[in-house]
Structure formats: structure tokens, C-alpha cells
Length: 292
Ligand SMILES: Nc1ncnc2c1ncn2[C@@H]1O[C@H](COP(=O)(O)OP(=O)(O)OP(=O)(O)O)[C@@H](O)[C@H]1O
Ligand SMILES: [Mg+2]
Image: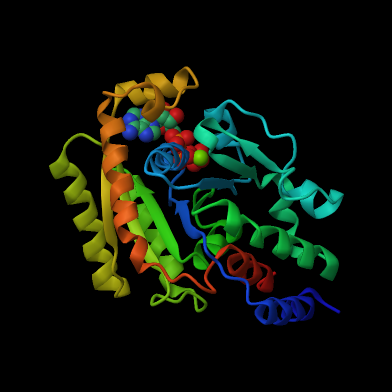
């Protein structure tokens, strides 16, 4: 039996069990690297905790393991250990600050194309249990339009694109959005695309960046973007990162800390719009695996 057939069986079984996908999934991505995805993921997680949400960060970046560096916590196991070594989901969850949980995809993501039925069943069921552990799951992806990143993004009910005012970041954001909208499996009705403008020098600059991106997306791709907020270029944030600290946790008065608070309350305001059932973490992985 090939992976596609095995998946159809798993989906059938999953639908019969009708797993309620409670956790809200937000996939954080960008066209260009180094624009602040992991920074946003980690600070958003801190504020979501402060606002009473249970949070899990899934580090799906195949490159540098950013989140663990920022948390200063080295995970003992990653997704590969669950798939290939029979570890259970609790074994591969690492505790960060403020009870933020995180999972490192590690090399497990790259190996997702070649799983046996038993491995698929085990993976999907393990992921389903995250729904009880988290209100919000933040997926931190690598940058760009590589297949793995795009497929994660394609299947996400909520996509958060991080861009900066740099022209190259804007053009790369547009390229990513174009790849997304033009992909036949992307459903614009089922996904919400949020934009966060990072490293801005003023409110006006942040708004101008969003409106530039939004106007090309609406003109050429007939798409609509949601402006979630902006984060200033902040020396205190840079200093915090350099000393392996999280600005929202350690520098209460930093301009970026306040901006992350506002950003997070905007995220929470959008909560009621999410499509809860059948668009959760297990569905995301099932769709992802179906294309392999
Ligand atoms: N608002 C900000 N103000 C100042 N510096 C920032 C800000 N946001 C991010 N940075 C700087 O940019 C660097 C890159 O940020 P980060 O690692 O979050 O980007 P990334 O998009 O996750 O990168 P990658 O694509 O490599 O995963 C940080 O180390 C930090 O120094
Ligand atoms: Mg990163």
C-alpha cells in the first residue's frame, strides 16, 4: 500500500472517531529569512500565556533551531524520536518559560514523505493529543518558498506573514503570497492571512508597508490580507536576544514589549473567527502527508 492509500485509511478512521480539533493553529512564516519569525513566535507565546492561553510552539524550521536558542532549553527528543523511536508526545515536549511548551520538528519533518501506515497512525494520534494541551499552537517555519515550508503554510487555517520595510523583504513576501494563491490546493476561503510588519521606524512606516503589500495582493492575486500589527526596530530587543533573554519577559518597558502585547491582543480578538473543527493540527499533517 502506498502512503496515499494508507493516509486515506487513517483519515477515514480519524473521521469516524471525529477528533475535535480544539487548538487554534497559527503558522508563522516569511518570504525572506531573518525578519523576526522566531522572535515573534516566542514573544507572542509569552503574551498569550499572560492572557491566559495554553501555548505550544512547534519549531518546523529545518535549519537553525531558533526557538530552543531563545528559550535556552535544549530538547532531549524531537519529532523523529516520536516517529521512529516510539517516544510519546509528552517525551518530545520541552518546557520553556511560563509553561510554554515546544516541540522541535528536527529532521522529523524531512522524513515525513516515507512513513508506514503504523507510523502515520501513531503520528496523527499523537498530534491529536496536542488539542488537549494547547489553546494555541504556533508553528515557526523556515523562510521562503521551499516545498516543505509552502506545504505547511498551504494547510494552515491561519498564516502569519512577517515582513520588514526593507524592499527585498516586501518582494519576497509578495513572491511567497503569489506561490500560495496560485497553488491549486490553497483555499482562500478557508485561510486567513495576517501580516505583521517588524522592525519599523514609525507607525506611518508600518502602515505604508502593509498597504503597499495589500494593494499588490488585491490587484494581482485578488487576495485579502489582515493587518495584525507592527513591531518597532528596538535596540532593547536586540540586546535581549544577544544575552539569550526574551524581551517581553525581561524588559517590561521596552517599546517592542508593548508592541507584542498589542499584537497579541489583536490575535486574541480574531479568535472567534477561526474555523475550529477539521482544520486543526492533525488535519494539517494529514494534508501535508497526502501531498508526499
Ligand atoms: N523588532 C526588532 N528590533 C530589532 N532587532 C530585531 C527585531 N526583530 C528581530 N530582530 C533581529 O533580527 C534577528 C533575526 O530574528 P529572528 O531570528 O526572529 O528571525 P527569523 O525570521 O526567525 O530568522 P530565520 O529565517 O533565520 O529563522 C534577531 O536576532 C534580532 O537581532
Ligand atoms: Mg527563525
